[in-house]
Length: 152
Image (cartoon, rainbow, N blue to C red; front, side, top):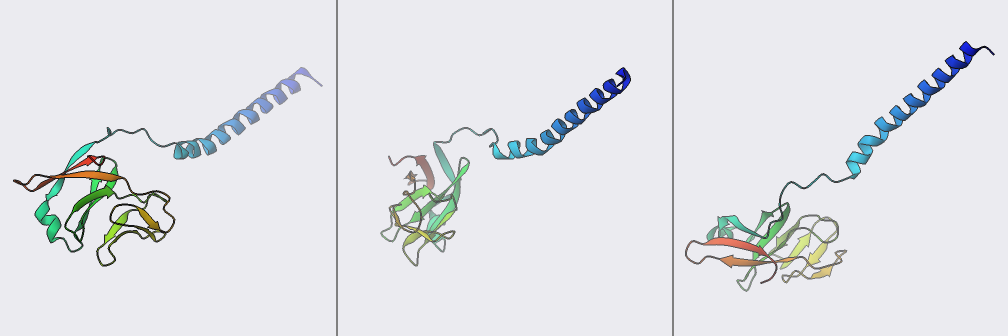
């Protein structure tokens, strides 16, 4: 075999391997970027002021509202005994958004029929843990509502 043919074969083999690596990279790179979560830009939030006041919450049909707490959702409600409570609005099963069902007296996850009592404890369905409870502070003068992470 002549030297020219060997060089051509070597060059073609190198070209084939290089294009195979480039093809695999173009397939797996988007998958890799999809699987890894993006970097968090927002800082952890420990306290927020809600964009509505206590009177608006009392006038709401279900006596509850969903609010943004940092990157997550929260739910605030007025219980039948007139207590104001706030929880994480993410179901502990698959992070679906929960809702307050005043007619049933529970916090309900529509995804898989998970139910929590008004203390945030899981009472039926697939949720493995209680909802995270938030502390609620109402300014009696202005009616503004402040939510703080934790139960204090």
